[in-house]
Image 1 (tube, rainbow, N blue to C red):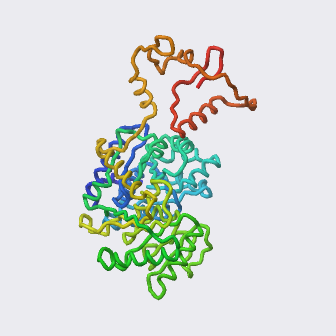
Image 2 (cartoon, helix red, strand yellow):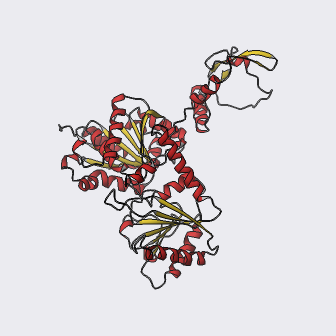
Image 3 (cartoon, helix red, strand yellow):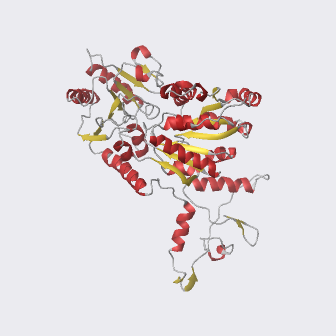
Length: 480
């Protein structure tokens, strides 16, 4: 099947989206063996960039899109098929021939379809878990040579060593999309510092692409019943002040399944006689939609009438409802990344883009340092903007080499004049001194030292350690 080459210049994208696509195009043209990073805050159009890349790259070979959850697979598949193209008024030629949900159970059918329909523009969308299972089943190699590009949407939640092996095994260009490009992301995908597109949070707010955020730390009632009454009163005050409307929604975050259930009961009582509605979501709940208790995020969440949405972890990602503008942290998160991702659910601009909108509102308990955590993210964002608009890609080897370079070329250490060490000197081990100790292991006769070294290297990488030198000692012992 022949097709006219698609040009994105005519697409109704925002300037910052075109700028990101320019970065990605340059990455593809460079033939870099490393990964490209597109870092933009939630709500600034990452999905549109991803859809555009996938459709153009699918002209020559299937594209694999990986995301963290089944709910996101469904949302992205809809965007790839027609939702995004209809939204921006693109022509029918932009819609791919097939968008396929890749599962361990359908891998053989998928391979057969790819082989029998080589002229089709095909986009494969699957979860991290599905790809891991296909790999565990020994079938991931069937996709090698049939997939030409990998796009990763917020793939940071998975362990680095396994993903390094699976993703790099494809040996194809890989683009990572992230709103929180912390160390784990960059380590997993070996991001190329020359191919990073960064849009800072402060700039996105300044351009009118997203809402700014207010963190309001208050002494709040310890009783969950009293907390619910106080929360309803504060939300009502925000509406009375015309900051938000009666249609705006509140995400309530709890840290335990029991808390989610108890908060649902308390808010239901606090809102008795009102039409606001309370929805509790937890994967361990029995599915009772008539009681507004569910065990999965509803597909039509943005269209549902409930204003108070209670959860533990299930509303951190994939929620794109601009009516969600208030967050109540009954029990705060234990790490900054989750806090940033949760706040990301509040900042989507209701449109038209560029017009001023009220700040999103976060109600947090005193003494939990929520404002400090958020401000630390803003500091990271500011530092990244000052770093030539790039988040910091820490290369372990470079850090160690810079430390060595800072040493004098010759110094008097431990009773001797010693030269500065050269890390690539095969005789380096002669100057190393270790405590006299030994750990004995019983090994199988078929132990593969190359595989052992690979696994050790992966574990060192996951622990932010750098391998300086590998080889054998003069007496044939393994050295690493």
